[in-house]
Length: 366
Image 1: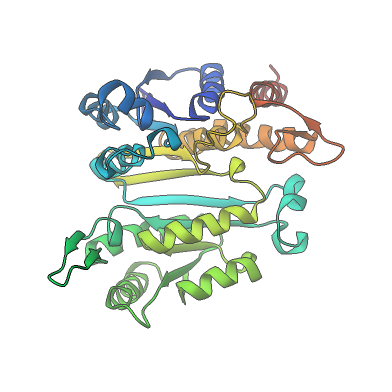
Image 2: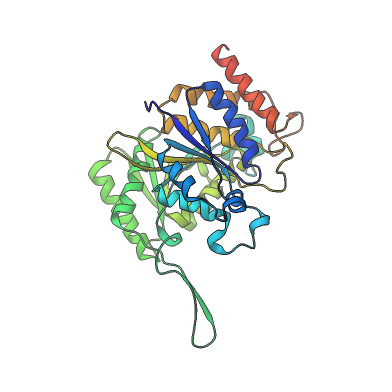
């Protein structure tokens, strides 16, 4: 176990500070963490004139893990592209070399009826999307907007992957599958994209060399999107590139009924000591329309902290306790506005944090 347990907290914008405040309460209750805090996104731009200051980036590189709330909002929509709040998050991912994004789509039994899909399609859903995070069309070169001699303009983005980029994210997917149902579905567009052909070939080679115990299937991205809303429980682990992972993970997120319930982890490579850089964040955005009103659901951020305990600090028992406490709260009918149903108890952000802490205490005999 990592002994220092240093965590950099970046609350960010909108509802980020509110949901992160509940996470801090939880981490304080567990104890043993060295917590520091910094600015990211629009909040950082307002103070430093940049969405991520160099000093904050340096702190992130030194920390054992980073917890982020959310970035962005209409206040900063008119900023130049390089200064937009989202560029701070992209820099964190790039400079920390966080190449594997883990996005679980888990339907709690108590929330099966909240999904827009039929209950029998989503009840018991538990899938994981592993998205490559630092390559592909979002970072490929050349890129930009250029003027053409005929007076038109042309926008250019390049989809590019190397063997090593594909193999390292595929290994994360195969290792996760070994701890789940031992099934990986690799998703690309090999029918129309050379990068997809390479993706399929390299993942197949890796499976045949090192992971013959894991079943591997392949699927085109457009078909995968359709299958996620037709029969999502057919999947265990999905591994895909940056662009398709961005789209498919949001599609999978809505199967659960609310973005306010979904955590994520972004992982780097293991070092010689078995540690890795990691950033944890809820899937939801900054939701500026409800910011500062005690309406936000903190569970996605709380569950992101649970993933941090599990993947960065080898604290599986504590992570299990948090997960079970969240389940207990939902089973008791306690709901924030995004997941409330008739007959349930509506609560705000702080009261939901209270409920999770009380459930943890009850389970641990506190």
